[in-house]
Length: 460
Image: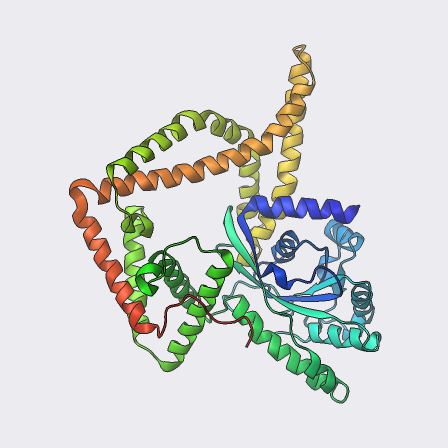
């Protein structure tokens, strides 16, 4: 019962904070049977929440023992999570004996155990050196059950578009099940070598799945190139324009990353040229307040009329409900911002953790207090008490609508600005921007040996 309630709360909180939670490679997660998940750790306590929200199975997480104290620790214990005692915290590694036995029990019962073998959460764009905990649990479970247990080892890459931003996007990228047969044979004679080989193999896989790169500058270049390519793929690869699925987008991103790493090893100077062109183009778009799609689009009269009618409806009919949502949720929003930015002042890799954890509590408390006040006023005036119940239900719904309204309003303003800048008598601006696009396309063609319609695999 507690697990079901926790699962519901986690899914609601994560899918409220992030606009899109995409599960890439969902068919690679076995629907049942003992499963060991291994993931990168870029976003503190949000990482396990995102994995739980994305998967259909209940996941038992192994986490540092520092989380098993206080109120959070109480719930972690009640939910059956597994404490890990790290040597870096000056713990005796022998303290993990009981924890490992707990992991064996979960796996033996056909459950799912998840670890973050980097051992720390961080704000770097690349996977840190993995610890051997995942391999030790795997080989320990195999020995405990005398090889009778068929444990599936599944790597997972967590890719955040902007992990700190409300209504951002996150992809849970599931890799192919790891073939462990060779290591099991080695472990019979050399268990430490087998653990080391498995850990090194997982290192490479997680780097691929999480789109790991050495610096944030490299990350911005590859992300910018992928975003540009998705809008220009017909010009670059000759393929018809269609809606790219999350799986296809991740495949393209992995291919760009692999190509970038290869070109970097070769010392290609064209990468610097691509960086300059993309940076200049993106800076210009940002200054004008438009997007690459606006530059690509044409503006025939019938399309402009449809645009005006659609956004007239948005402005005239949407404002009252959006204003209601703002007025009734503004206290919670202000308190969350105050908590995340002024009170805790967390490290960058923990900002979204503070926002989600404390935001859930803050919105629950403020909603109940506001509902109590509204109900009291209704009863005092002789109105039905159940108006307060309707008000309580309206709070999350109106908050969701207000968020969606301002997202669409922002896009509408961008569209209006683009029409004013790029259509009519100001076509010279569009021509200049399209010339910049053409230079980027030419540079991408010279860099890539083939169209990036399919890409790197998620295993090395």
